[in-house]
Length: 341
Image 1 (tube, rainbow, N blue to C red):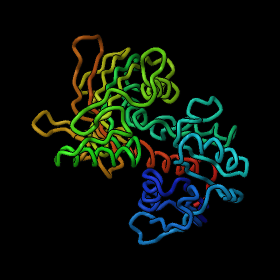
Image 2 (image 1 turned 30 degrees about the vertical axis):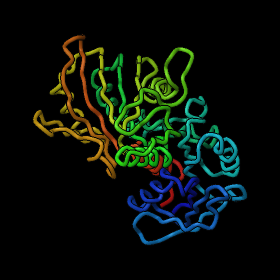
Image 3 (image 1 turned 30 degrees about the horizontal axis):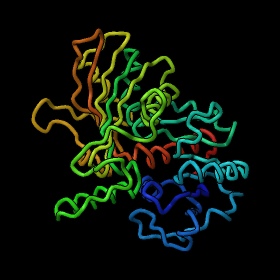
Image 4 (image 1 turned 60 degrees about the vertical axis):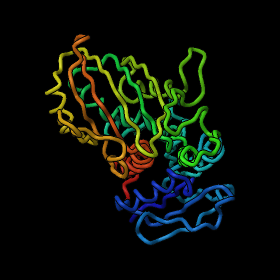
């Protein structure tokens, strides 16, 4: 016996990845529904590389009764309308938007980091998926925190345009072409030219000068990993299609050498350590695309502080940063609570 599962936003980048990952991981499904806005109603949506398709339904009149889980990838505004309806009908919502992440009654889950927190889902029948940049970082931080108790994190991100959706990817592609052929650059999605450039601005600016993306990394890390950890972030959009990268500086309460950190990370769930101190002995975004793992490289001591480490962290943001983590949450929910399949 499997699950009756809904993918909301099935025609978007993350929704399509969810469908592909459900198939790849052979998630036990008895019935699958794909829903999206009325614009996509009736469209055939492929289920990964299985050769199978499902007709997209209109989310506005979808009946949530009798469905076990719904993975939402439709943005905060639409989620605010439809997630409560699904939850009230008994369908557990796994939400990719930022809407519920800091709600104290909604668990914010990265299965390799805080699986026990999922037990609180019954308060709202909703589980939140963290921000893409947060998800990969806490996977890398968790084993180090367990070993040496992290006190402070300084992170600079190099985030791909797919984090801004299909329109972000289209803008990078179009601007690159426009530059090569000498056309005027079309700037719509981002605040400045993204092709052959970097933009130190993701999401809205807050009163203290930080951006909402940077704020998310701070508060979500505290909720998922440890409220006592101090985090400061600078989030940058870079001209990469898929794959987020992070340069992370860590301060710890207890001593942990780079060699010991490498050993710990090598055995950590969800982490692939690829750290050779030679040309090419590290992972870059183009190499992580399509992979499930969070890759860690460039692990080294920071001699400027007591008990400091530096590392480089790369992951496919459409997978671990969104779709994969959501499916892993669904798997965890099934194992611990729903127990079908």
